[in-house]
Every structure is written in C-alpha cells, then in structure tokens.
Length: 140
Image 1: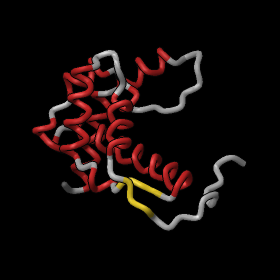
Image 2: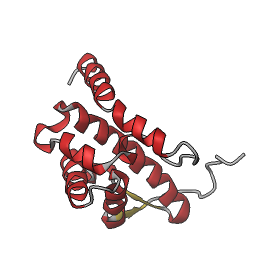
Image 3: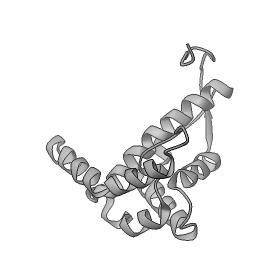
C-alpha cells in the first residue's frame, strides 16, 4: 500500500470511528484515562465493523491493527523493564490480531478490544533480550 493510500485509509478510518472516541470520552469524563483509541472502544460496535478477511484494506482493520502494534510495543517495554523479556511483534500478525479481537468481541460484546490484546500478550511466547532495566525514565 502506498503512503498516499495509507493516509487516505487512516483518514477514512478516523471518520468512521469518531463515534468510538466520542463514546469513550463520554464514558470517562470524570475519570482520568489510562488508555484511549480503538482498543478502548465498545466491542459490540467494533465487532460489526471488523472484517478480518479484508485485511488492512479495511480502514477499521487498519486502525485496530495499528493501535495494537503500538499497544504491544508499549507492553514490550514494560515486559523488558520487569524481566528482560518481550513478545515478538511479528508473531502478532494482522490475521491473529484481527481474528483474536473479533472472536473476543463477539463473545464479550460489553468488553473492550484491549482485553483481547492483553490475552494475546499473556499467551504469546516471551523471548529473552538483553535489557538494562531502569534505562527508561518516564516518571520525572
């Protein structure tokens, strides 16, 4: 997919999913957010829009998979800091993520896609890596 097509697809996905962000913002008005984006959206709505067979040509699929890559990358930093292990992001390819989230959302319509990702991360093989814990300072 060329860069121009990717930008157009992301713009379309953002327009299609504005309802997810709006609902999430309304639900969390009084509480500080820990996570935001399509992964924090409502499973019942997302399950109707996800189409794994269309791959990343589907704007909703593209948005979810892009969000998932960032989420797994952040989880990897946490895993590395805690024990020098990480998940191979390549192992969580688009089919595994999209189908895993869709299956979870169909079974748990009141749930959130992030829970499906958490389960995929928990079950994924962890690889050992050389990592100096404490090298990332996000807290002042």
